[in-house]
Length: 238
Image 1: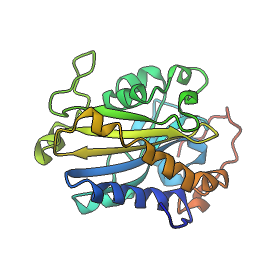
Image 2: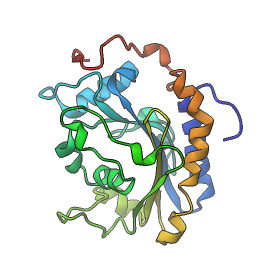
Image 3: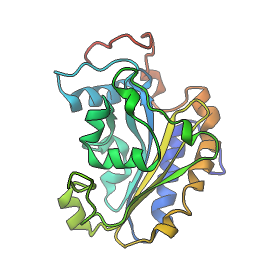
Image 4: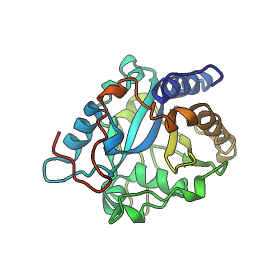
């Protein structure tokens, strides 16, 4: 992360590529940030809206797990705009999050509270401020289940076709509380002690991109972002 970047998206793509290249068994590496809907470009807002359907009303402040960088074994996995299901996932509430096992475990492992999603539409990332980064760990994608008996990594076809085993990641918060996350899907079983060495990497990413976040330089197509809605105002359907 030494060279300067024009946007966080550029830095995230470089970070994802480096993660994929540095781990010989990496099948897919992705970098996300949780951003309010109003801060997303129109294509991401459209994606988030379509994902939840017409019966759900998104708000300007609804937090969205937004894909910023991706690198993997297949060429479509190296372009975030080609993501079929993970380009922009709105976190509508605690119940909604709990119904997505991987995201629920990700936030739980990172010690992020999503209880405030119901009323305030915010994630509590205070425990991750500063250098308090944390690791996400799924020992074996084929067998790891949550407390309700659901596979944490639910994409069975993907897991089987690419021999996915350990999935791990790291997360940390910027000074304003914005959450940044990296996730790596591998074809080997990796020990937790190894995974615990990685969270410091997200600090390097945050240091390299903190000023860009403060300037609102998140996406390459930043001119498509129209942030004219008050924090609590409902956005029209896009």
